[in-house]
Length: 273
Image (cartoon, rainbow, N blue to C red; front, top):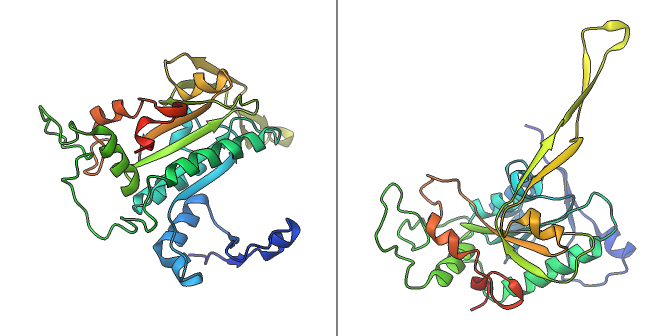
C-alpha cells in the first residue's frame, strides 16, 4: 500500500493574509474518505496532539450532492466516514459546477455550523466509538417492531443524540442564486440520462474511450425534497442516517420522520435545544 503524504500549507495562510496561529491547514494526498480515516484514527492526534475535533465538515463541494448522489459522492462519503468514527458530521455542496455562487454556499454552511455547535459538546462524546450501546433510543430495534419506541417521549432529543454519536449526518445543498432561506428536506429524485459517451479507437481498433457525464437530468417532483428545494433558490438541509438499513446501529425509520420537522429559520427542529 502506498503511504499517504501530508504537509502543512502555511503558504496558503500567507497567500490569504491569515495570521491566526490556531488555524492549521493540512494537505493529504488521498481521497476524501482517506482524510477522515487518517484524521480521526489518531493521525490528527499524532500531528497536532493538542487539537481535538468537535465537528467534521466536508466541503463545500463544487457540484450538487442530492438524491442518488448520496451513494457515490466523495463529499458525503467523507462525512459518513466521520460518522462511522462516532463524529458529528456535515457535508455541504454548491449545486453548480461553476465558481459563481460559492460565497453563498459558504455563508449557508457557516450558518448551519454555528447552529450545530450550539448543541454539540466541546469534546466529542463518541470519537472512535469507545463503546457501543445498542439500547440508545434512536437506534432501530429491527427486526423487532416496538409498539412504543424508546424515543417516543422526546424525538428531538433522540435525534440530537444520534447526531452527537455519529449515527445521523447533515447534508447541505445550496444553489448559486440562494435567496438566504433554508428548508429541512429529504432526498429527492433525479435521473441521469445518457451518462456514457464513447469514441472508437483509431483505424477501427477494438478499443474505445468512454466518458462519463450525463447529457440530461430528469427530475421527479417530491414534497420536501432537496432537489425541489434548490429549484426555488433555498438551501436544503437533509438529515441522513450514517448506517444502512438492517445494520445494528441504523436509525429507527419512524424516528427519521421527525427529522423532517422544521423549526426556527426552517432548520431541523432538533437542531436547537
